[in-house]
Length: 102
Image (cartoon, rainbow, N blue to C red; front, side, top):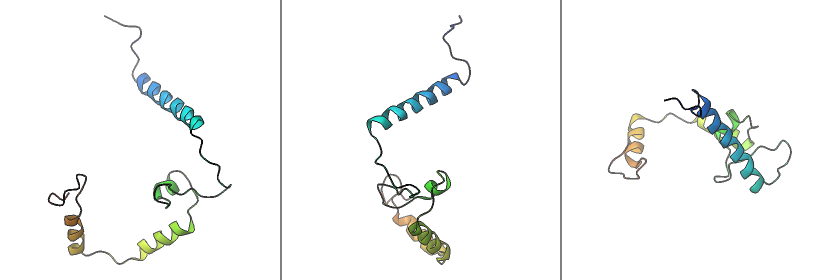
């Protein structure tokens, strides 16, 4: 039994991508982003800090604050194995339970 409506390999993925792009466009019109200054780097709305992914993947110009934080991380002393173990035991992981550290 052969159905002519059955998509060929990869067609469904292309259709999903096209629908996602159309939805982004539609939502962008309904919820416009406020205008920003030309050449001003964007800052992550929730944290107020620019993220590494935004600089590397989205080709944003790094802010002075981002560069200062990156420099501080590069110049920080490495953590000892004991400190790493202590931090791992304190972290609750995805479930937030300190009794089962990840």
